[in-house]
Image 1 (cartoon, rainbow over the protein chains, first blue to last red):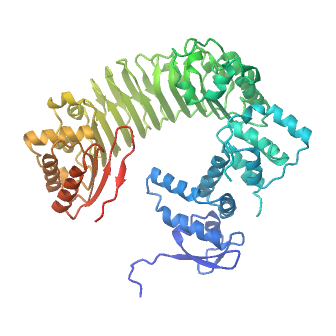
Image 2: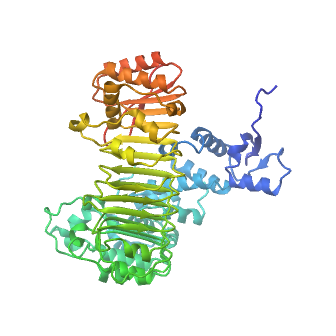
Image 3: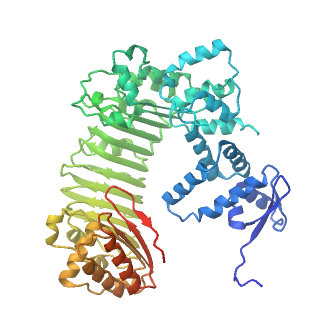
Length: 164
Length: 448
């Protein structure tokens, strides 16, 4: 028997790998996609919301982020410090996956935070690092590359040695 | 692993805070090269190392001139809505005496330079920031503001730093909502031109702006203002009916007149406020006061019934502490509805001295207070504890108290403080920490 006077409403989310997660309504409504789903289907409150583009691992991470971050009432510096810790622990691949998930779920603040974190990571890094991060191949011919390089030579002073 | 879709890649590239990184990304692949052209900003800053290389005889032939790099970036971009050009902080700190520099290569508010690139982008430009190189800009007045105002019709944000700016020929910029001037000599004595030509301003920052005599800010849409005035005893006036947030730092203005009825958050730092005229604040909830003459400032402050969160500090130097001190009661006379109070080290010392001379008088308002943060300066731990106990006795609904000590206090003081307080009033939630000038507070957890 529930002793709370008001039961926190839970929403069920179903991920790509068919796992179901029960999430507090407050957190679920931070996801623009979920919010729109309920606006379009007002009677669907008991059914699981399908999220075919998000893996369970990813959703778990995102739910944890919101739970540990605390309400929006927490001080700006505390929120900033929390964001920094959250990002620091993750490698490039997992951040990329979180970006795709945050983009699909339409979580603007989280997406801003993650894209900024990536920009900060590739700051001052070599061309090779950038290629590896974005998963692109060098498709320039040697002459094209040389010409482009000489035009942008000024940009190549003081680059960080790659650390991974 | 899926690649990121192009719009997200552009979003990431747009968040790089220097176009140098963007230029490097161009070499990664043809796709990144073309996506980089979608980035709608150019941000270029001259580093100290580039400056030194451009002057050293061995390297200077190989260094592309800064202005050339910038011009190329602007011309290669497809569409720009934001431009930031400037010199790194390290260059700003170079002393005038160290360097004999009469060149123009980093004179960024040079009108002839700005005329080379601004016309190309002026139609779409929303944000412009120029941080000039003081050594090359301080000795000549620039007419660049007039030019910007004549061609950038859609500009919303303008920031100028380290320059000498004329306002002759300034045209109205009705879309400008944010203006930031830092370490600028502005030839607009009373700010008349600023008021007339930028009527839509919502955010105004004037930090270290020289050349002002009797400045009057008169802006009907202003919501947030930061104003730091250095030495000259100017009379300061501000008329801003929509102003919600105001941070004012000044020294000894001849007079200070505030007509800002909507103010919600006010941080005022003033050594001595002569002729302080301010209408009552009906909506002010957060107030931060710093002064060398706290008691007289409190005397002239209009009654602050709306204020819930109050921070107070004294700028008085220690030798002067024995003259007219402010006592804690004075705060509650002026601000009867305060819920949360924070006392800086100077304010705490003054209040403690006043307590030692005359005790702490009771005030009804003290029974509304729920939270106190105090930065302590301890000369005599027993005296400090006795003051704290007196506060605890009178603030009957106090639920949270945070005390911070300076690191130079020895650990004996800290442990006496903690054990004394927690024993005297265990129902209060105690928080402990350390404060230091110029640093953020550090909180420490103590085993319960």
